[in-house]
Image (cartoon, rainbow, N blue to C red; front, side, top):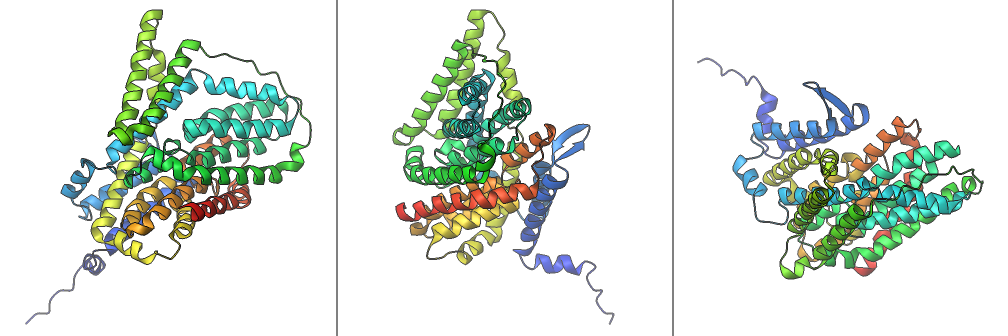
Length: 452
């Protein structure tokens, strides 16, 4: 009797015998190559198009999970179109709509006008410039979007500092830290806030009540640490160039401010009247479009600003978030999520999840971290979820300024600095992160431990 032929692919056979192994390997490889792409080749060319590597790699990983059967199409389809708070399509509508409202305010010139006023008030004092910049960005970030603020203020700071012949690093760092600290205050400040809070069924007002004090603690500690870090250079005087004060067109500005204000108010009370946040945000953006078109009709001018809005929308987040959702579905179906949730529980989940999310954000970026942590959080015992959830929110925001790969904002920030010839390498960024991000993290977590 002839011997049976040994399997030609024994490794593949061993993997298939362990349901957790194959999805675990594919997810780990996807995250590894995504970060490698961000660091070494942030842009790739496909079919003559220049695309960001981070979402191309995650889409590839999601497709592999589908082809290998690690994710079943019926389960994925049911999750994508489910009537639940964690539905990624609703979260995308909410995030993109809120981002477009912020982009509109930037397009009508509000942020540039405020930045110019701030520079004029600073005069020849670097300390005033530093403090005014930190406070201005902090306030704007609370009510708009941290990513939009960074995209708007970074080029402006680079141009001003080049004209004044001063080191831009203290002011760029103040802007970046303020934008990624005070974004914790409201649920709309960061895409990670939106995802984590929506997945846990937390409303706008409930979120604000919990995160108000930790945000103040983190923002105050971060601002103080920044001042100590750059105090020597800030004492020197500067020759400030006269920046032209370009006043925004009043009518479009009032439309944008009123629309955002009403939207924020409805988000706050929506949970009490059964109005979903994604529907409020989508309605706010649609009403903005209608008012802009109406104003254009009255003035007999085409609403070109709407075309610019759509060009600046974060469309890359659509395939990215959907791919990450597919990855999470694979981890859920294989039982990895439940296993991890059981392994990382402790007596102080607030501190544990805060530090874990902070470090994980700097391994895989804060959006993938939030998507991956969401099912882990919901698998915790009911009594442990609240502290762990808000601690993860803190880690996802503060982790953004520990290293340049902690958030998409950091990747965009580093790219813009290279374009303006500003040297702010990984090691310098990390030194700043150790001096500022770590104290801010523990300040916020300390307040959370006392209040949650």
